[in-house]
Image (cartoon, rainbow, N blue to C red; front, side):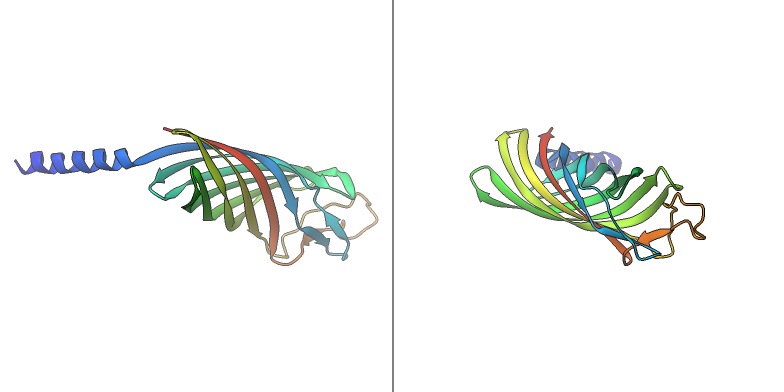
Length: 197
């Protein structure tokens, strides 16, 4: 009898929970803007401001959402276009929604995870990443919404993390560069579309 009551309570909770929550899949595309990089020889390099794409799978409940976000950016060093840089973010994210107008909501959230940095001139490495994001979402249909978003991505990198970028064999340290400070800042401006079910 106790098992039957317990099973009924669990079933009721699951049904009740499922009726108020939805899974949402969001696709993102937009432009990434990056911080300047400084070499050990105090040369400055800009990462190209290039496009990115991404997606997230989130659990939407009432005025909140939480889930996993993935984004990929591929660019190059502007002063040295043969040096390619690829970044892949995998982050846990959580956000709170607030209504603004009919079918239009604003949201603000936090993210935490990892940035895998890969280049064509050094070994790939993964770094801790975090940041903030916010945007606007317009509900087109019950299960479909479109929006815009700005995302700040901060990757924590120690200055001793080095990669080689100088093709001149006469230099001793091969122009090892490091990130300017302990954090690489990137900003993503995206348009997105979300389907909920």
